[in-house]
Length: 396
Image (cartoon, rainbow, N blue to C red; front, top):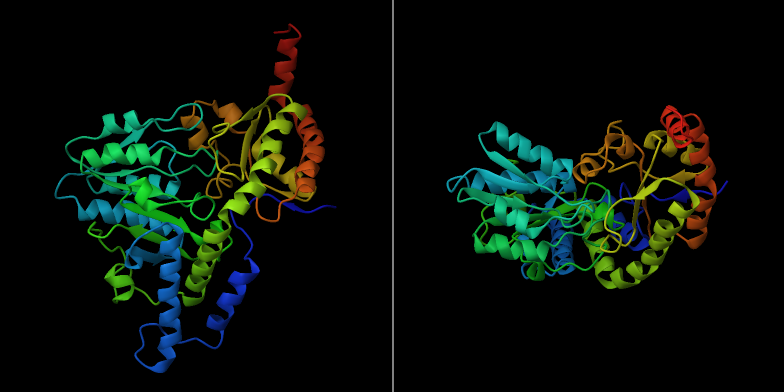
């Protein structure tokens, strides 16, 4: 049986260069970066180098603007909560989109419990945010806007630069969750015009448990973890040196190889987006048809539950997900798809293919071969499909 891994948004394999860079800090260079003796020097230098590598990935001027965290979720929590708390003397109003990752969505809900108010900006049928909707949502007491750079579930890339221009006019802090895009496509924080940006290494072949939050110099943020002076006093705790080194190396490799990676992924993605609806009836392509992540192909298969489809694809050696990794076990319709206007019934049939460096044309063709009979098998067991067929034949 062929093995095809198409769930890279949930976790991607370490590339060899990253693994080799990490190994010395899992064994010989075990010192604490905060130590003043010789054993602390190699880890401290390595962390500083990684900070520079991550800064270069996103075109940041000052490496000290990079704060290392343990995950994209932590970075988003830090951004929403830390920035809101630091600017609450101006007001307590936060603006986010209706399709944000749960780490932003639930952080905003937590702030509501602390007396803040949150406004949700709607999206269109493709999951795109209208900058004018953001502008209309900003009030005199708005202190933070957080709109994701791209949605990992449906792949749509948002007009962050245009939104940032409107937010800047109102002198409001602007954060973007770039976990889905950083390392996968070129990013410049200067060109985007944002004040804070989240990223995670496991999205571009770095280790899990290593991420970062970039905060523009001069923008105040309140630490959420109290303790020592690590990360410039903004995020206490002994650094995960090996993981940070891996993140830095992955950032360096992505900076060099992004164009080649995108050229590899885009035609494979487009083949899935074009051919799957031709081979299976009643398949809805979700997300923007062109303005989307290079390795993202997302669909809703009508009359089928996504979880059943996932399990049967897995039995054929194909690994995919249904929505984001944080919702795939929730057994409920994605809030992203609902916000895009899809019904609960259709949204239940979501399936997400996220391609990676090792994905081949044969992998895509294998999916196109095994998925149609699986969909047909599940539909034959679906009462919804039976009702549809009966109605199509003129029955009641």
